[in-house]
Image (cartoon, rainbow over all chains, first blue to last red; front, side, top):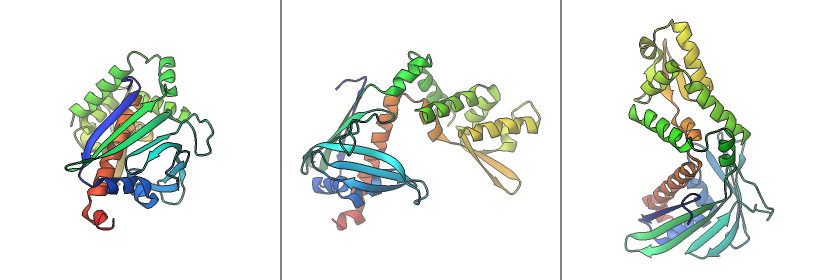
Length: 156
Length: 113
């Protein structure tokens, strides 16, 4: 883990590991949670095996669908681990995804209360960061974001 | 990326004015009518409306008219463009995990498994 580039999430989900696995690997299930409502998700390809395609599209009106994820599974251990990346697209072509290239690793373990669910997302150095530097925000960027967030939140 | 920068420009342009910042600040507490918002400003209503329209066209607020009252509401998603990129990705994955959790713990969904 590189704290400047990576993020991790750990959570205990109160559902059996097989159910969580099914939510990830069944296209109809994935479509129900992958994208926030009211946007509609369409799972075009979900070939859950190493090298398999992972393609989802999204729509605001349920009619016109725009590209969302075009990625490739790197590793799959049934009921335990899924690793995929958008740095290589579903056709194995090296990609330059917006806003940033990443590899996501999802691991599931049994837990007394359900499933020990962990995600590690490793990012490439994002294009956005370079653009921020160009804009002169490189150092002050985090501060600006924090201040603005506090400004908006404080009024709540 | 170009789209992202255009959004970013819009946000900063919209916030580069004390009247508009005051409107954002007030709307942080919840929706308000144009009348309420204008009451705090020292300018004519038409001038004030220009600021409201600018905030709306840059996507920082939504407005809706009901009868004679136009209500303004903050569009919090819009502020996400000024978040640090890693914070933004973290939020995306946290929210994604929230939705997964809700999906697998809904009793109905469990029964179908």
